[in-house]
Length: 249
Image (cartoon, rainbow, N blue to C red; front, side, top):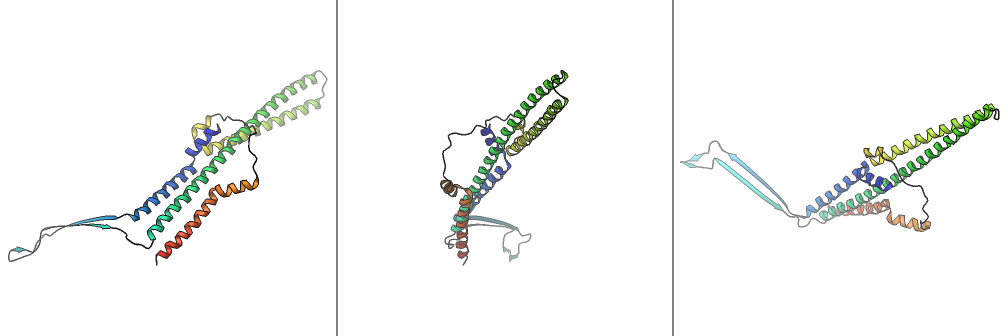
């Protein structure tokens, strides 16, 4: 079904997998940027062994085994907004990646729907062509019988035979189109087990669709499309980068 196809595509499609990894990466970068607000701790240690310790009047001037350890804690107090702007940039990049994820998801669902209904349409063409072949074959047999009885001419038989050849050619074309449509759908699903599945659905027209005005559709697109939101976020990123550059002074 269409619902099952969409579920499989969202789970297995490579483009969705890439978009998901990019989103996880952006969230990790945001967490990393937040870490700059917190104290950092570093430690070091050393060991030195002196083979021969010098002595003066029987007193050793040191130890044979020498140990040294150091623990350092650093806390940023004031950075003129560099840390804050870096964290803000990471947050905006996360939002930008989220919109890219939504865009990839929307495009995938749209392509799955197109491919799914292309399969249904191709199946209908095959069924219609198959039925037409059966009808013409019966007509051809009747024409041959009437020709033997002398009621039809050889031209009539030849004309029906040409029709039969033409409709069989259309059936082959329809079957090839169905094969290609299925491959396109399976390519989006990226799920090998689906190759043997039967595609089920209907091509009935929706009668309960509300009437939309063009102006409202344009307004809704401007408010909802990921590309528009990405452009707005990129503008905010640009402003944050200017502030970050000024902080270098």
